[in-house]
Length: 330
Image 1 (cartoon, rainbow, N blue to C red):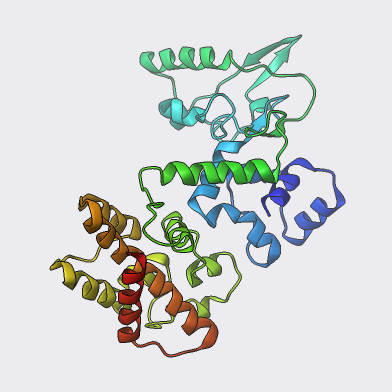
Image 2 (cartoon, rainbow, N blue to C red; image 1 turned 180 degrees about the vertical axis):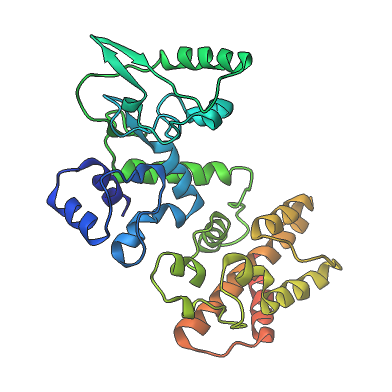
């Protein structure tokens, strides 16, 4: 879906773009590549908020999208990232604060004197001496920029050599970020069947389609987003696998065999870290990890039974399945 976001930014004169802009009352100055939500509701509402679906999506979009400078007609001087990896307001926060041109485009920050571009800054008040020093640093930074007399600023995709967006490069970037995030978390331990380890990986990566995630993607109504076990709280990953009374009771029951009492963690990732920090070796290590893998798999299995087959679930049945899985894994 992100390709439509990209096409909206690139195809300024396309009829379909003008139609979308008319339907949603958008102006031509909408900077979709800067992660701004432009409309709510409907298919285009989902497309324009894709960066909210997943933290890795958001980071890849922020990193990958930038405007290639031409005459500075679309780039905001202070707030867009167009010189290096940081916006100028982040590099020179004091100057940004006293500027009267905070929302100005690059082309509005100076003028052409023949073939020479001259920067012109307007301040709310006379600058202190040390602030004047920062202005000189800013001017030195701006020497990296090369404005053109003609031509529009165009979106550029960092993950492709030619700067053109592709779904393959987007997917590769997202997967690379997820792999980096989970590098220290050795999910693939050979403790359980591959399908179980894949589930654990998806849970830690935030990719499981809980009702909360489906709601954000506008695939279900918000009234149908509650946990199928307790029906009191929205079904997020943390709630489903940890914070729901049903699930936490299963964890506590499993830990009785290890004579361990603990407090409820804030996230599944923290819970996984706790398992890693309990250093065990040999057969004991495999038994220890089987508890984690079996609980997550059993909770998800019976959750789906409840959701898709409308079957009542008793926690003792789930606890029995967990014991069977632990024996199978070991």
